[in-house]
Amino acid sequence: MTHVSVDDPKTGKSQGTLSNRALFSLCALNFFMADVQAGIGPFLGVFLQRHGWQTGPIGSVMTAGGIVGMLATIPAGALIDQTTKKRLFVVVAALCTISASLLLLSSQSIFVVTVSQLATALAGAGIGPLMAGMTLGIVRQKGFNTQIGRNQAWNHAGNMVGAGLSGWLGWQFGLSAIFFLGITFGLLAIAAVLLIPEKSIDHQAARGLEDTDSQDTGKAEGLRSFLRHKPLLILAACLCFFHLGNAAMLPLYGMAVVSAGKGNPAMFTAMTVVVAQAVMIGVSLLAMRFVANRGYWIVLLVSFAALPLRGMIAGTFVQHWGVWPVQFLDGIGAGLQSVAVPGLVAKLLNGTGRVNVGQGVVMTAQGIGASLSPALGGWLAEDLGYATAFYTLGCFAILSLGLWISSASVMRSADRAPV
Image: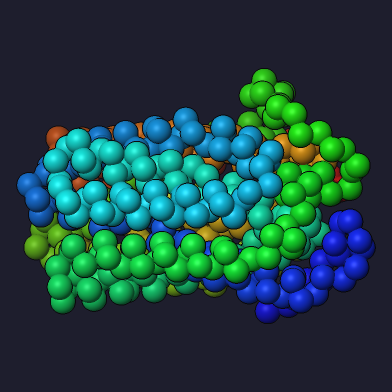
């Protein structure tokens, strides 16, 4: 790993030791936080199926959590811009996810499951802006794209390892064992964030004020200011349509294959995650090079184009082997976006002091799509069958592609603007 030397904003002295420790701990945090951010994630569907739930109610309770997370994301971004206690908020997010796992272990009633999903959603609302803000505060704008690529590679590696262990534990000891793994990862994430030196985080740089003497710590700009930012709104709309189709596909494909008796619940669901995350590791590392050479627009265009093909394959081949092409395409789309989206937002809003609010705006748009997707996919699968659900979900990315291509001149101008 290439280390970035950070100067203390007050003394101007080299903080190389702090920087090296901060970067190592940041990578470790992204590794362990992967399982915290996802919670039980794709395993929730098959877990609830085993406890008598139908696909419609499963999708609805996931949607309830998604809506709460969506509503919390912009306020979370504003709070992260203002706070100098970012490490503490990471600890709180991890504790929320740990509590959600304990709740699901205790009961599978609709009330308890819903509360657990709300806790997970609140944690997820803050994790994205927190990771982006802490990274920006440690490496600054110049090093952001490179480090966010590394962050995501470690994050996807954590997802892959967590999913692999979950599959093995679920196969050996039952699905309940997966919850204990999530709790362990949550505790390790807390340890990792506490190893990041507080002095290594420049909180002004973390909110996009690296090159200004502004000491504004007042109320963050309201949503109205972002409604005038056309490139940000285009990006948000495209991501909303993409996630409307994409979010439900992984858990739904796992349920489709398992319900057809073509896979062990724990092992097959783990495989769906492992394949995608393995692809995402490589794609995340390559994405930062693609961005440097070709720009954000073309990278995101490729990511949007992967979903229609994924939906077509998923609907046509509900087979154990179908996980390979279906999740390979997921790895391409999600891997590219995991690096390009926070990088583009940081670039668009550099100097505004509201970078993390902007991350929250984009995540809210993603959340609108992602929160509606499980309910839409679940009820389509229950009423019309899994194949129709996959074909329909895949079609939503065509809207993303159309808007992104039609807005090429606006987005490419913003992409080429100097930082």
